[in-house]
Image (cartoon, rainbow, N blue to C red; front, top):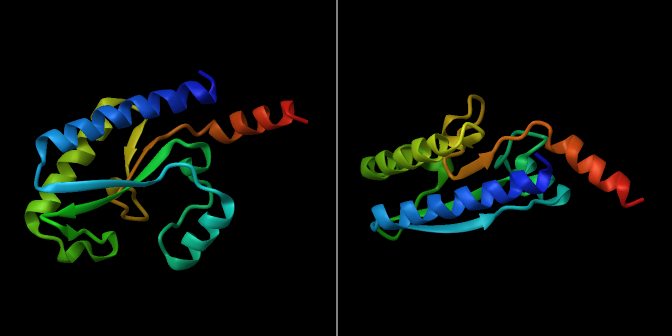
Length: 139
């Protein structure tokens, strides 16, 4: 697969996932906030503690951050301990659903070093090399 194939698969899975979430959890609201991320923005998020990785799937349009609300209450990922238990159960179900859709799909709620329940991605470790190949052809 080439990078655009992975991006298309990610988009297709994300649409199916969002339709599932909206159809099954009406007490929730979802707002997609960031798919493609630029280096400068990522440096800012690292500095503020909203990320802990230097290479993110956002660089390759293979990740999405989703702001979530439960009964109109914003679910701040940094304050997970304050989330209503019902919201935690729903978000966990959504994370498991996302990962079950494809073996490359990863949910940030299961990251080992950084808990990020608002993050979904298609993990393509070779994405950086694919992007470099694309950019070298443009020169």
